Amino acid sequence: MNLKSFPINGLSGEIICPGDKSISQRILIIGSLLNCDIKISGFLDAEDPNSTMKALNNLGSLIKKDNDIVSINHRSKPFSNPSSFLDLGNSGTGMRLLTGFISGLNLEATLMGDDSLSKRPMSRVVDPLISMGKEISTNSGKAPIQIIGGKIKDNFEYVMPIASAQVKSSLMLASLSSGNSIKITEAKITRDHTEKMIEYLGGSIEVSESSEGKVIFLKNSKLSKISTYEVVGDFSSAAFIIVAALISKNSEVMIKNVGLNKTRSGLLEVLLKMNANIEIVNKLKTCNEDCGDIIVKSSQLEGINVPNSIIPNIIDEIPILSVAASFAEGQTTIKNASELKVKESDRLHATSMGLKAMNIKHNLLDDGLIINGTKDDIEIHEEIESFGDHRIAMSFLIAGLRSKNGVTVKDCSNIETSFPDFSKIMNNLGMNINE
Ligand code: S3P
Image (tube, rainbow, N blue to C red):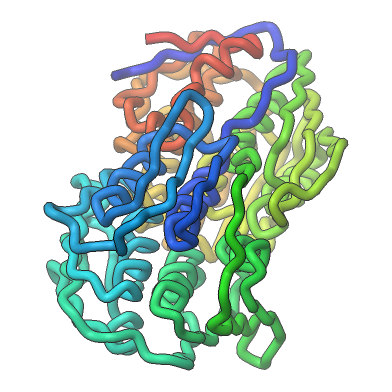
């Protein structure tokens, strides 16, 4: 499905931020382990969390969706080997987190995914799980992943060779589901939703500093049962709305209940440095996660050098940041972001191709992009390729706001994986996106 986005006069209004994808998947997994009745509100009803839900139900979880509420029910039987392959679709988080979780449960299972997920690196979780005692085979480091046997060791210590919350969480879930302790050191701080959720449930998480980085010690401890859980809004989805309001003229938008966890919301810091008019109000904590309402107004942005240390905390926002940088005065430099090459698409290449179609002067680096912004609206004559990647598709639809003649983005069906109401929400704020 191709989508077209046309220029408009301005965006205005209030919306409630859709639920966080990372947290929705984590509460399904950890909530299933608690084995009690839990009602989850704010759950992201999108393809990625839904494929994680299906896989968990295949292992014996009792998870149901009823309108806006997702219920996890108490199981009378233990988890069991699935009757068929677990299909995680497009979800890297689902595949990597469940590989750890299932490893800890001592089950046998084979996890597979769609074409994009089958090309993504899985050795990053499988290798440490093998060192932890598991027998797992892959297709040369890629899915399908076959979990064969072995037992998770206690007191495993791991120094993360890459910045990845999915790897960190996979190993923590393997320890949690097997009832063991683990110490993980990360040189670059990645999203900490798993740690925050375990802490919220009364688990023992100690965080300290060492010369190698942040040390996370998850000590085997009993988690408390809960009856409700509220998922905060997804900062990564809010990012599209924030940039849309910033780059379009005469705009003022309020996004309510946005997750503001510092390890996720680095884009706010970057945009504020770029001269963005953004205000945060009504700050509160929901289920141990910071959240609040964001007010954004049209702004003339200025290019900056994005600090290297913040890259893991804006990892999913770099395509939309590149669109913001395209309309900023001066140059924006993004480096140290080669992880983008192994996301749902090679996002450095995909972003560069979109910028090229927009006639935005830029350099594609091996680990980033240097973008020379323009203050003018642009003419786009080529259709932009999404590379089947939701974040690329949404980023370039937002760029259409500053086009003179509109933009067509090809193959946008993948938006369903993370933000199914994207067009509806953006059109309610004043955008003009249609098929
Ligand atoms: C995620 C972590 C990030 C992010 C992904 C979701 C998570 O991946 O890109 O969209 O939920 O843990 P990495 O941890 O591989 O960087």
